Image (cartoon, rainbow, N blue to C red):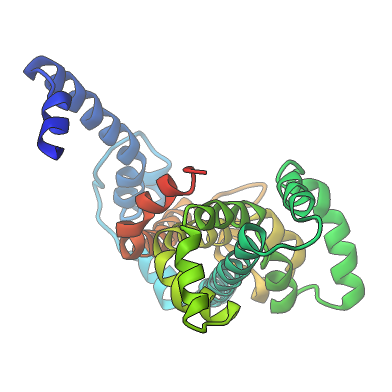
Length: 284
């Protein structure tokens, strides 16, 4: 069966050549900015802003030493990285937990106005984040949560899109599995933790990647809620190397490369389940 399906998908040699040529060309175009940034991080500041060159004429580790050693007294770079890790990991864990619980409740529990609640959650996805950032700031200011970790993390623990993803995945799981577990004496929580969650690794992996990327790359919300330099995350802190008169491109390039590493690590850890989770959530 699988062999017949693959035979039908076989392409002629010219079509394969064109296809792989386009894919390779796209990969080169997509990767070239990252390669250029990495190579430019080893250039002196004057060479970075000089005529375009791929490779450094004068190799230097000045920018890397400045970022990694944390020797810059004006910019607490290591603290920014720690803040980013605390913020992104906490938000990721919170969003995955709340999305799984809410998604299961909306998919399986017979609660009043379930569809209306689900539609209202979906409706919040249509509201731009910039519209609610001022009310959020006023609320957190009255709570005394500005420039605090709880002010950064707690308002971001719920994600409507991830709730939608988890609900769609739970709908694809046969109800017969839950009914059989209920006959064996499992409670609702037992079914959820021992049956549903182990079957939901693809969706949970996809949610983990989306949640981490969203939190790690977030700029406007941390910029608004954490104004003190020691509470900045890395995305906000790197802007400190820019002012009205001069931009220090070397540290910015190094910081950008460092920011890419955790995202790549998370993707490599969960890539086996990622594509399957994305495709399965659209079955129902």
